[in-house]
Amino acid sequence: MIVVQEQDFDLQHEYAALRQDCPSIGAIVTFVGLMRDFNDGDNVKSLFLEHYAGMTENVLADIVEKAKSRWNLQAVRIIHRVGNLLPSDQIVFVGVSSAHRGDAFSACEFIMDFLKTQAPFWKREQTEQGGRWVDARRSDEDSAQRWEK
Amino acid sequence: MLKLLFFARLREDLGTHEETLELPEGVTSVAALREFLCRRGDNWQTALHRPGLFVAVGQQVAGWETPLQGDEEVAFFPPVTGG
Image 1 (spheres, helix red, strand yellow):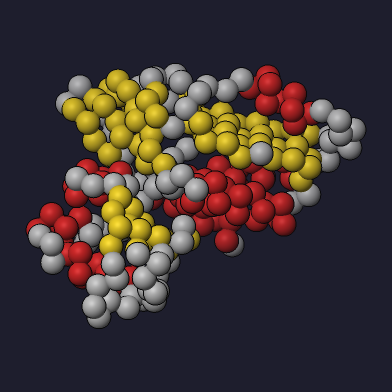
Image 2 (cartoon, chains in turn green, brown):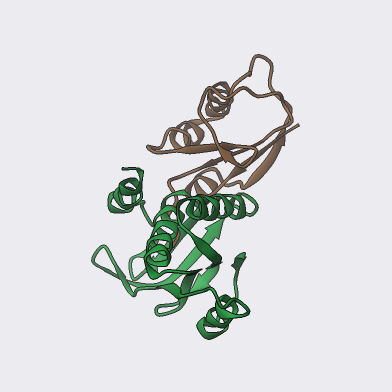
């Protein structure tokens, strides 16, 4: 399941959906990304998230397929929010179920690393100095590249 | 008709998100389309030469030499920053 939405999401609901009707699952790993109130030394008051509807879902589906070909996974759920967000708001959810924890941990991290570097989302921060588009980080690129090794 | 899309900083720099365009005479690739658009003015020249600029054709990230037939969706955008 891959969803891009403005509304918030409920972790318990997503966890329950991953858990239901599958006794062969031995592990569920979930990740939630939150909005910070600081970035590059400035206080961030709010965030606007834009995306490329259509392409976003295709890229995320492709990342999930790559993860499934690499690890033994039962199910993957991704929710990414767009629109206006405030500090402490949830931005992104990735949940992975698998027979074994090793596969679930690795796949969850792999999906987040590629989501950050390939999925067409863009953040615009509102700070006390005004608005600015967030620059891509070299460290995110490095995180994704380590999976190529 | 080509459908052109611009996102994030590019959308702001160019003051437009979407337009349709008849494939211009002599434009056969994404690179040539970019050069055609750059002739519209300094803001286009600057925006479409920002470091790390991406282009997607048919919603797939594409190289600059990708050929164009004239009925594609072509999107220009800066490096992505979701998550």
